[in-house]
Image 1 (spheres, helix red, strand yellow):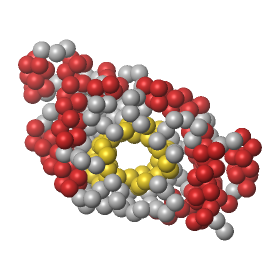
Image 2 (tube, rainbow, N blue to C red):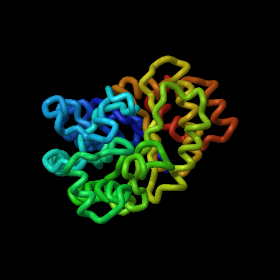
Image 3 (cartoon, rainbow, N blue to C red):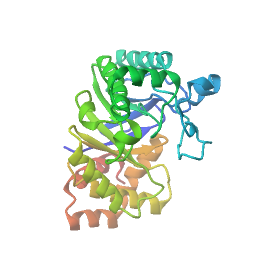
Image 4 (cartoon, helix red, strand yellow):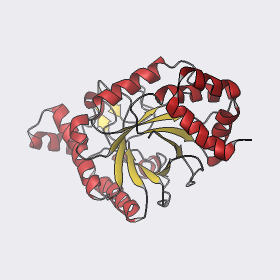
Length: 297
């Protein structure tokens, strides 16, 4: 059965949602305590705090470092070089300690190279040469080995967030989906947007990933913006996604109250519920019925 869940910045389980994903290690370097009974999402090679303290951690390329200020790229964050042994050990230790807690599962994000051209530091160049592999295969092997190491530390369900590029993921980030599938239980694909008034791209990418990936797929939608137009458009996107062969649809929210607000909006909007009935969104109707028992008037 299709699950509905949250991706949330506070360690809170929200009633009416089948699974809750908590950012326990964030891109800003803030570390939270592992949260029991939730999936814990761990940011790997993006860490603003660590880079401020040690700029030598940055991944580099012929076009400069992996920073937001390097306008030769469109990087949203500053990236650590993924072959830095000390930092890798730090991340793996955090994964290990998280898994020791009674968490529901572990998800990793930003565990890969920043983009094409990274990383060309002396350490990466030496490792690439010693591998005997070509550049793209070496980068993919580097990422896959890290995930294999992490998988061994996690007895619970283990998954990864992937950049929503079904075509150039290996060239850009070092992601070999088929190789990675041997070590994960699911793929988590964020399709982030300020609004979902236009839906065709969400539907297209979802279908692409469901066909391409060899493990169950979670699709994440941004749900932070509380304005009614954005909320209703996002709920229609959830309905369309509910027709695909997904394990879960996840809503990114800042806090539990926002998730509850979304559920109340869906339950109490008669036009939306009539639209679901008219066009036969069976899975979405089941979700609404569950929310109605908790958040109905």
